[in-house]
Length: 229
Image (cartoon, rainbow, N blue to C red; front, side, top):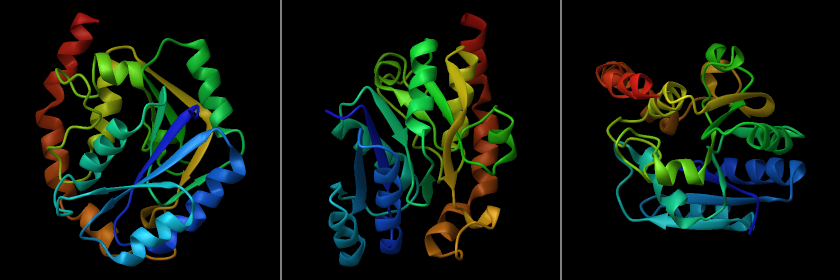
């Protein structure tokens, strides 16, 4: 068994599979990479992921609302490593990222460890993480969602703010620590880091305002957690 599972939901971006896998392999040999692919996606997507030598999990639902959160959940349930990075196919791993995560995990009794995507202002300040690492024991016992042990991300959002709720909930519980030196860069076009936007990015951004409002409407859930902490 590897020391960490890296779960990567994908949709219609076969070009990203090899660079992601190579970036991960260049920085550690102790991670298990799992791509989670829609059966409705192109054959090229599945073939590109499989060609990296990584494991590939196919899911049978249509890639509609909450596709990312549901694929993360499927990948989580398909793996058993004690640490799990909640990834994406537009990441670049920097040397030492896993050692920095493990340093935090060894030092603190935390359930969620933030990685540094090198771009998001909230991430750079240490108060958020777009692609965090979770402890399996934390998710299994408390859940990333209030009142839902075993659930990583709440599948009620269209796409955005699943990471915000996970991190905010962990922070309210006193279970979040940020690993500033664990550099897992996010090559997203919003940060002028991707070659170009595409239909998958556009799908993820389409209902951002609705997702933000939903996040705010659910804030009372983790605020109650802070009262009990």
